[in-house]
Each structure stands twice: as structure tokens, then as C-alpha cells.
Image (cartoon, rainbow, N blue to C red; front, side, top):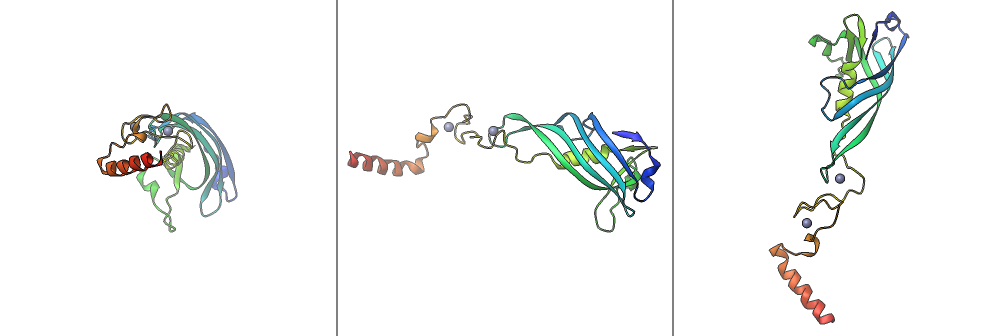
Length: 177
Ligand SMILES: [Zn+2]
Ligand SMILES: [Zn+2]
């Protein structure tokens, strides 16, 4: 994610394109695996630098219904503000007047997008991932994974508060017969 510094970027209107294909940066959420790819154009817009393009990676996450691990493709549209400050210096992370904190992209005498990429990946981790849209989840009573097979709980009125209802239903069914 590092490229040789191109002075073009210091000229208003100047642009530099960065192709990304690298291991997920250190400090990213542990769910991210393997590589991150993408393409970002850095442009000097006078007041600030803009970073526009896309990133793509994969995260291994637990389904929020059945808890099985599955892989999710994460694609991020990038549209951020950057500054030519050294990303190792804490002072580089000061907010602009608008309140936003632009991403520092200098690392010594190179352009380094690893901090930008790390933060964007972490911001876009799927929060309530599902292994599939119609995941049946786990039975709240016995814990059976209902995607694999049904359990007996649905027909078993083991909740004592429901017993009177079950008796009533039994009586009605007998009447109908
Ligand atoms: Zn699931
Ligand atoms: Zn059950």
C-alpha cells in the first residue's frame, strides 16, 4: 500500500492513482482474512486531498442467528478526505473545522494508504451478518440448528404458562371429532 511520493499530488488539480493488492493491514479487525485489493485516485482539491475509488476484501464472521462461521465479501466505495501528514505522528490526526478527521497518508517519503484502508475495513465490518437471508437460526429452547433439522420444541408445550391453553385446545379438538 506504499508508493513512491509523487510531487504531482502537491499541485492543485494533480492526481495520483494507487492500485492496491496487499495483505490486510496490521491492526484491522481479526475477521478480515487474506488480501485487500482496490484502486484509489488521490486528487489535490486545493483545500484537501480526496481519495476516491473502491476496496474489496473478505471477512469471516459468525451468523447472528445460527452462529456458524461464513465468509462475507466486503466491498467499500471510497470517498474520503486525506492530508499529506505522517501517519505515525499523533498530531496528524487532528480534525478539520468541519469536525472530520482526514486520513494522513505520508510515511516518511512515501505515500502509504494503510491507515486509510485499515480504518475503512474496520468501519465496514458487517454488524449483524447472516449466513443466508433465510437462515432459520437456533431453537431458543434446545439450541438445535434449525437449518440442519427441526427439533421437537415447536410441538411440545413445555412452558407451564401455556399448559391451560393446551388443555383447552385438546378439549376443542375432542369436541370437533
Ligand atoms: Zn445462519
Ligand atoms: Zn428446540
